[in-house]
Image 1 (tube, rainbow, N blue to C red):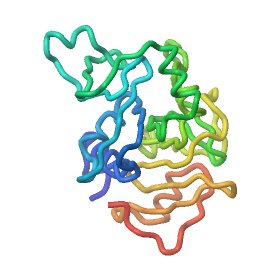
Image 2 (cartoon, rainbow, N blue to C red):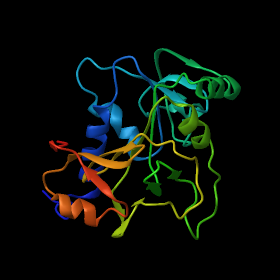
Image 3 (tube, rainbow, N blue to C red):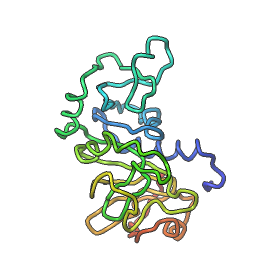
Image 4 (cartoon, rainbow, N blue to C red):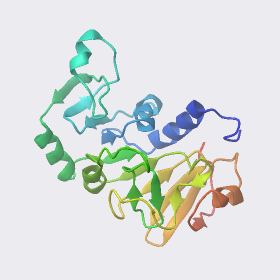
Length: 222
């Protein structure tokens, strides 16, 4: 099934499902807004992670629309909850966890990622500038940074040889997961480690604005 046959929800589910397999039982994980929030629904059996929201929730639970939850929001401003045993902490303590290297993985979207693992994800041209927020701390402080995003934006590659937008952080990205494949950032450049069998290697290369090394063998990402 190509992306022309998948709707946005199916594409996002495919990406979230593959990222979920990168997380280990007991990991402390920060999830960005949007697509990354879908990941907990796809965690394999036996894998439980501790979700951290940088505005001050450790052990964040699923989104909820209950009346009492109107006082509890995640870092994206959406109603949130905490699991039994979870805790609410102040922002200083939260960023102490982040900057202290206690977050095992952070998963977030991107506007652009390049061959050196540079990340640009905070300025949308022509839009009001919200500021880069906690992302600049997370991508530097987390032990592993995973970008989960669609491979292109209106046909334009989002994976480039060099970012054109202002950077969030330099050489911080470890792994890129899109609907087309799984790409590892290495000191020697980008390596396509897995592919969606709906696409050919040539199609992935055509949709990517940076040189790709192709892993051998090249397994399916599904």
